Image 1 (cartoon, rainbow, N blue to C red):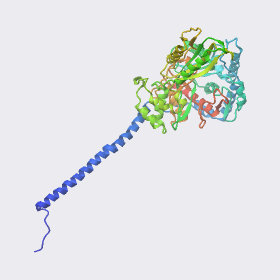
Image 2 (image 1 turned 90 degrees about the vertical axis):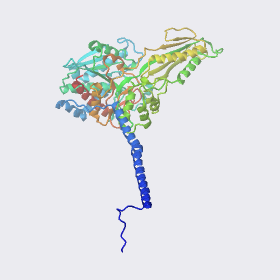
Image 3 (image 1 turned 90 degrees about the horizontal axis):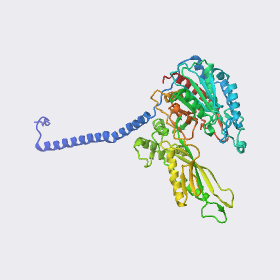
Image 4 (image 1 turned 135 degrees about the horizontal axis):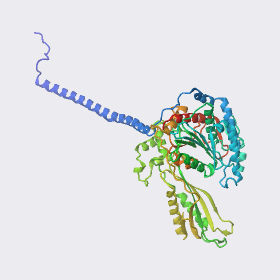
Length: 579
């Protein structure tokens, strides 16, 4: 009979059943191993990668929350006013603005540190000439606006708005310039008072500090008047005349006059000269100054017995002073980034929007705790790392000290009875002039003890055989920091939105900080919203500074034209704001 195959439905022999069971268990084990491996990979390695990827975006979103960029803000449509932007970009306007700036440079409105009383020192009289120039150049303004002369040469223009409930917009600049040292004149490409135009720049002292902003704001008002603009919000123009030598006669008196009229917090926004644009980490930033470092000059005097140089003491006043200077310079102030420092928000903006932002900085930034919860004695690793970018960044986060003036002795064979040094300090945000004075007092105390001298630290006293510390002028504390939340309706949102409307949404508007000081030091009581900002920009131009205070000072004309476009938009946008 023919053999038939085994019927699968039949029971298996015992040996075969055991073998099948082993195979089944092995297969299940393999499946379990594969499944476990999948779970480990997907929730382990891959999950870690996914977490890291999401963490990157989480950090980026976190940084963006600290650097909100408002949408571009355009004023309501108005055919006559809208045409201004095209006209400002025309050859007609370019030629006119070049002539106006050139003429302004040619007026030698210099301020000196040793100026005497107004009306007695004839060096002040040049400001009569400068006002006459402005009056002739902008006749419509002088016809339509109220013009007040404060302390003789301070200029306050008022364009009255129709709605008294709206606080005024205040635009500032200064009429004066620093001198041109005679020995440098030959080094200039064009004579420093020529106002020469080479097709790209207007050259000369004051062209970029800051007659460009003064002329630009006046051009803005002249254009708006010609276009029949009728402001709801009052517009003020305030021009001091001694910014380069303290501002006490100009801005100080102007601010007092304005305060008498509008009171504490009576102004909506102030825009004065200041920082502008800079490419950082692959991104174009506009950085209005929203804070200023403090300032104190300290004079140190060493008094020791004189006598004939043939029988000297072991140490003269000059030698002792030199030792003290060495100790002062050997100990730098700490590098420290306070939460209120605008550079902290600038770092957040860089981390949020800049493709080339350093990874180490981003890592330190993401781990940063509030400065209020950090022991100030510990190193600030974020600030220290950021400071590696160079001194121009380091001193945004560090009190600077500069030994600038020294004197001692009158004759080579006479021991000096007195030696003095003056040290300039720009005070970091988060510190005060007391920090500077206490540190110098401590260092001077060590020297006084070593050489058996009496220490007089800021007590107004002086005697032989002593170390004397005095302020050469009253200290200026760190400026109040302007609010800069771009998500809140307010002046910063208008400023940032105006900037992005003019220059494009790819630019980032970030708070900045001034290491120097401006006339705004006298205006703190008028508003919290102070911006030290030069809104001009020309692609490929590089530094906005334009060689201020040195040879070949100049201003890029295209940058200036763009600043006028900005001011026209800003004034109109502020006029429509309801705060």
